[in-house]
Image 1 (cartoon, rainbow over the protein chains, first blue to last red):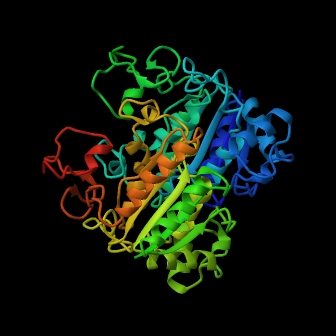
Image 2 (cartoon, each protein chain N blue to C red):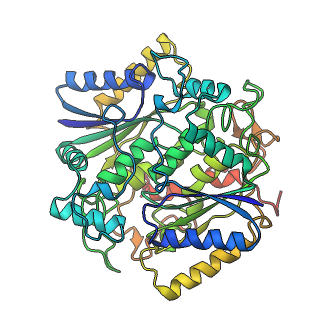
Image 3 (cartoon, rainbow over the protein chains, first blue to last red):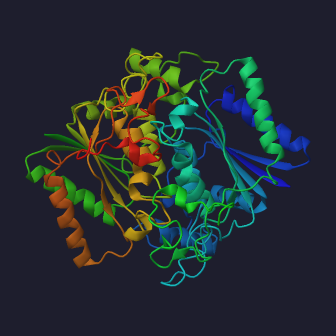
Length: 263
Length: 263
């Protein structure tokens, strides 16, 4: 299978750098084809701006969505953006690998999403009306592909536990796993999270590497997170609220994951 | 009072640009001093890297935290970083203003946080041990100052409601309001969120502007969000989980906000 690894760390001689090398080797050994977008090494431009298009729709006012649509539809995107979109289309699975900085992905990776996720490619796909709010959250350009996060965090696992001060890791990653990956259609598999990343000696690294290896071996077989599709009946449209008879009265992020056992 | 507005939008002739101008005028009219960090206009460098320090601690391996600490403690930070830290110290209140892109802040603003929030300034402050996990979440360099988000979102308010598909707006903003603002000490006041930002005609803009004006008038008087301080007894240390007898059995992000009425 084809796998794209998007890597966002400034130092190759780091835990993240070592995990990147290991991941590439493990996947290749299993017979997969691997491409790596090493964003720092590529000096990836992080900020969306008017330089992202070679021919503006409007030269007097830069509207992000309409310029993105115009550029995507007419082949006016800057070359770095088009190249990353090709990699996404080529891939059967995409891995985003990064250190958790201030409870989210590094700016350089957020900027990769913002620029590569063009209007017509990752959003603005399908009919948009009061009866169909786009092909998204389970449908879209990247449907049928898998995605996975590999994340390092400085804190302890309990800090990200059900009652941990940082919030449960699933809730913290919801804007990424649901809002960025499930949105354009990816099936998202459970993340691989390394806690206490700052205190990793050789024996602990061996343990982490072995765990990650086992996770990579099941990249195409493990169950994905059962995020509820937007357009298969669970949500009222256009309000996009969960139907009243599903988990009645409950709120919060967990209600958007279907319980495979009990529904 | 002194107010810093950090603005992250590429087009001044936009709803965000208009709200920025209005905010500055309203605050000045009320007698406040205002500084604006207009990140796109400043061509703010988004990615953390080795160019952020004028004198490296190690030239063979770039470790973000230790280089940040070394640069902050010894005056080796690049000038753009030091200048923004001075603005933060000057301010009595800080406003972050941005469009919600992919369920979080734009990359250029995330990069402002990552670079300006140095080790020793915004993290790595105070004793770090198994009995005191740093001066953070309610304590720290920026304690006593207020912070507020002004956010525009494309979706409807119901999409971000208690059972909305995007997740409740408070949960979506938790990594920012709790993880980025409360962390170094800010008192965070409720966000001002504009929904359906794409369909704003003149009469709707007037309404939005008036609402925002009323919110700005209470910047220093409205109750802040009652996030629980890390070091005042609500959490077990070092596990940093909420004490078992507080909201027993409950999980999720909302448990980290104290209910002023009932506790």
